Every structure is written in structure tokens, then in C-alpha cells.
Length: 358
Image (tube, rainbow, N blue to C red; front, top):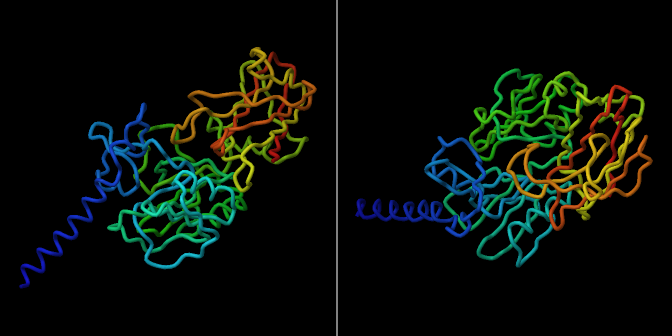
């Protein structure tokens, strides 16, 4: 009797585990370009638990309907989480997009079979991973940070905070904090404030699922600009502190999730500066000096300055101290907006501030 019971339990668990492996359908994994999600050393099981696809040659990669701005886990929560709103007959992508409209939405619970979306004010602390017809999404999108799936273990200031939003808020108040590491383990979060940032552009530092590193500012290709605090000259919203742009020093800034927390996905970006040369837009042809604002046309998985882009529409500008643009990513929230400035010579072209308006 005992052996038969054990066999029954074993078969039941085997069926559940197999459901996890088969949960991502072949169709969902048929993508034109496989975008890497994590280091290839993780197992197929862990990859599928993150609602991602698996290739034995490259490891874990994003499926054809990614949910940017969220960390996904397959499973159902074993306790109640306060609900903001419920939407029926919807897709996972629509569900995640709806959560991005609300600042107080920090997670999503989505039933695949029922096509039911629950927007939640809290995060599940106890998840049953054997039930595979439900997906929990935890919101990582933030207008204040730039986040990578990276492992940067050194230079901790403080540690073991367990609230994502509070950790970001505390870092913003700490002058020496320029980055944050997040570690998710069994639905528990540990946050580490950093006084240094590693080379987030280096794929060698690619983290495992649940390991993230966020820079506490917008992003530039030159990480030394962040390390030295130069970005404060444009992010402090003051017209008195500026960043100089020359023919040898092109300015490039990536601003994360510019319009989340609003029902409108479109936005305006207003740039103030001195001797801006020209407010550019690609429809009129690019010149080798001036300012241009653009957004991405494709999903890339993590922050990058490479890929396919489209310029925002120029609304108005005096080509000297003001350039104002209208930006849209269609039916999606823009993962980022980019400001690029080209100097002509050494005649004091400066970017002083930017402002995003709905």
C-alpha cells in the first residue's frame, strides 16, 4: 500500500513538472531573433519557470510575447494579495500594459485558462510553482532607474531591504548611492545599495534569473559620466547646471519608461539648453550638429544604444535654447526615450535640462 501511494505521488509530481516544461508552446518560441534572457548555465526547468523559452545552444531566451518591465514566474499565489482591479478576457501582454498605467500596481496575476488579469498592490510571498496555468508578474519598470539582468556583487552600502519601491526611494536620498542590486529568492527580495557600478554592457556579468542591477539614473554609453555624477547637471531640472557638448563629445542619454504611471502612453519631451544649433528630426534629414529625440522600434530585452529607432516629431523649437518633441510607441509604453546631441565645434553648446509631459 505504501509503495502504491508513493508511486501515485511520484506520478502526480511528474505530471506537474512536465507541465512546467511543456507550458511554453512551440509557437510561442518561434521567434525571428532569439534575445538572450540569462546566462546559459541555468537549467531548462528554471528557464520555463520564468515563462521563457529554452535552446540548448544558447540557453534561455524571450518568447514572442515578452512582458517588458516585469519579472515573470509560472505558478499561483498561496495567499491573498490586495487587488486594484480585475479584467476578464484579456491577454498577458494587455494585462502587463494595464499595470504600467498605475503607480500603485506592483504586480500582476494572470490566469491563462480563464484569461483573467488581476492588478495587485502587493507581491506574492508564497508561490506554488507546480500549478502552471497561472503567471505572476512583478513590476520592475521605473522612471527613476535603468535596470539590467546583471550581477554586480561589490561595494555594498546597505543591504537586506525587502521592498523594491522603498529601496529605490532610499537610494535616491543617499548621495553616494549610484546603483542597486536586487536578488529574488523564493519570492523574497533582498536589495543592496551600491556606491559603484560594474560594466553593465559586459555580457560576462549576465545574471541568473532573479538577479538584477539597476543604475539610479538615466543611462549614458560612458559609465564614467554616471560614476562622476555629471548627469545631475541635466537631471536636476535646473537651467543653471548644464552639460557641454562638443564635436568630440557627443551626448547620448537613455531615459527609462518615460510615460508609465499614466493612462496615456504618448508624451512630450522638452529640452532646454544654450546654443543648441538645431532641433533635428529624421524626416527632414539629419545634419551633423543639433539635438534629436527618438524611441526604439523593437524589443531588445535590456537597455542598449544599438538597434532600430524612430525619431520623435518636432513640435516646436527656436534652435537655440528650446526643442520640444512628441513621442509615441503606438499601443505600447515606450521602454525608453533617447536624447542625442551633436556639437559643431567648441562654441559652448550645452544641454541644461529636460522635462517629460503627458
